[in-house]
Length: 163
Image: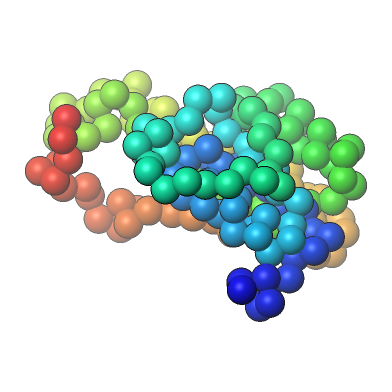
């Protein structure tokens, strides 16, 4: 049904954060539209994705490990995909970090937790989009989709979370 409107046959999609709750769905949507999809993330599945009860097909999705805070890891991921496919047409960056104290009141959060969020959500975004963007710039085409959170606009309300 969606493929009729968005035919991605022959395209390569990279979903960074692809083992997360939303990243999994982005990967599936691209695959359903005909793209060859690489889902890249840390080896462990996110807590939210572990709690997900909807069955998600992984057909057509190639899993790769990456640490977006490590420039060598990012380069190895992208170089590997380009070696295998020679192109990346769509990049979806859907990464977040949830340190142990993420849901604590702001005044009780640690600097270490803060830095983990900044490293994955900002430094990682920079490393991945710089590398993929350079490739897309050289070939003159491509799409980069950056996913952000409402928490970029408002602070989270800890009263709604179980700690």
